[in-house]
Length: 172
Image (cartoon, rainbow, N blue to C red):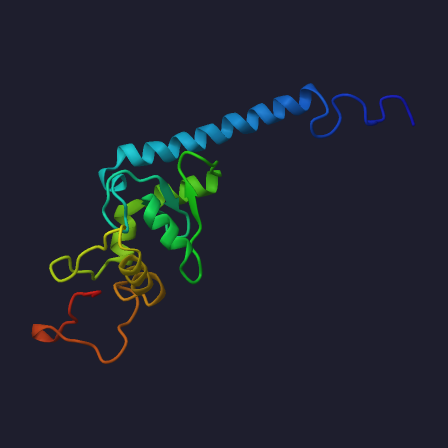
């Protein structure tokens, strides 16, 4: 082997020396920046402080599949859907730049327009996260059947309100 030929000495390869430690420190610092940005999304936007699924205060997870912020109880229910939602803890994981940008573009307000676009809180209530069966049914109606998505055409027969317009979505 030629001198300086990049053998397996100290500093070569992963975990091989000071160069590897600097790279790891840079990755850790970058990961912390993205985690901080997610926490800022929660504190900066009032709608993001409440669980998108049940309205409970104190979100602890993000639903990377749709871009919403949710509580612990709802995070478990979302994982049980078909297909399962990708849910990450705000405090116990790291986020990529792409995930943070996705969350910044979405958040609970944007998700409400998409996933609850025709939801009528006068005729239906958000489920209590303490009732796992009702929560599961609500999430299935919302995500699997897309009952309140304003971009999903209603399935026949369409219930019509006065004046021939579709009624707002009562989930239960």
